[in-house]
Amino acid sequence: MAGGLLHPGAVVLCAHGAPASPATTNPRVLVNGLPTALLLIPWPITGCPATLPCVLGVWSAGTTRVLSNGQPLCVLTGAGISIPNGTPLNPISAQGRVTAI
Image 1 (cartoon, rainbow, N blue to C red):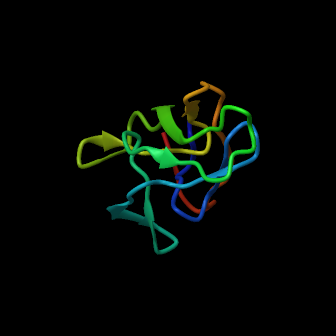
Image 2 (tube, rainbow, N blue to C red):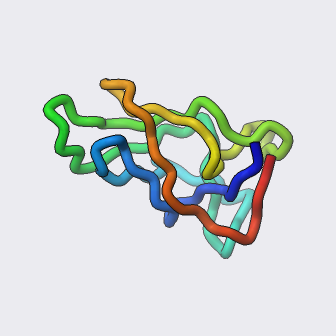
Image 3 (cartoon, helix red, strand yellow):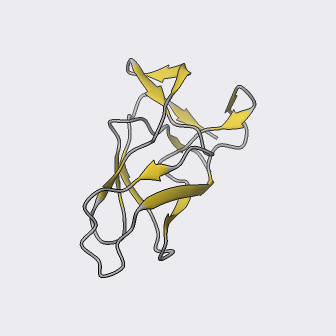
């Protein structure tokens, strides 16, 4: 499924509305001058108000045809969950100039 590539400035929220951002970025592929996020990199979640707060986000689905250093990238249409409670990550916005499959 094609979607905009996620980067540190993209808006990604846990199911409870707390923001997540990639722990590290991928400087090999830039969008709008910002590095992208690889699928295997965790996304720390800060300020989750849930009783059992979301601490980390992990992605399970991203690009399948576009790879960087042999690894898939995170996309707006991808799928991810938060740890420890397993609720979904909600990508809200990404850059709109580049889409990848």
